[in-house]
Amino acid sequence: MDAITGFFYVFAAILVFAALRVITAGNAVHAALYLVLSFFSASALWMLLEAEFLAISLVLVYVGAVMVLFLFVVMMVDVNMDKVRAGFWKNLPVAAIVGSLIAFQMSVVLLRGFWDPNMETPEQASNNTLALGKLLYTEYLYPFEVAALILLVAMVAAIALTLRKRKDTKGQVPSDQVRVKSADRVKLVSMPADLDRKQTKSDTAGNTNSGRQA
Image (cartoon, rainbow, N blue to C red):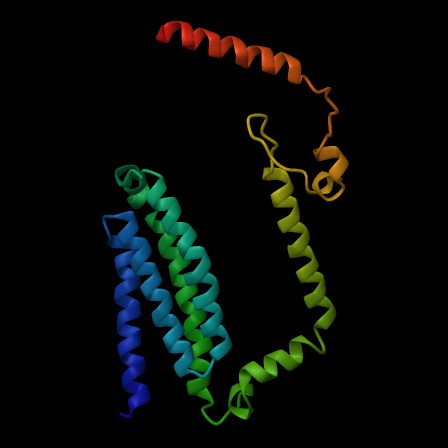
């Protein structure tokens, strides 16, 4: 057994253990952390299979974005695990059927390589990331741009729907700040000199102080 096979069995064992702990952990935060571990283990297996693009996508998208959001939601919301586990045995038959179908499909896909081990795959012919990039930006360029445009519209729509103007907050208007002039900010006022009144007040204050000292 070579080193790659050994690493495969190690990461596969960690993945199976982490997946079991996701559904058996008593704490929701611990279950989410075990799910992060399972994602990293699956990413390592994909790296061993030379699927670099899938591996880095799994780490960046699921571990870096989705799981962080899950952890924030789980820690902010007080999840009652007793209520969550209340329908476990009732939903077990449906879950078993779905899990069996998924296992059957994965076994068919994986056993195909054992049936024809001499079959040359695109990953063996060249770098799969390079081949995927060439295919994505040549043959599927327009669908890729349409998908990007749809995601952009969805993001802008989500921001527009959730953005509400509050009345108790104050903000600045950049357009008004750009159009401002010095004449609008500084106002020069011409006032007449009132030296006689000031002199009279100073003489009165001096006489009062001298009277107090006497």
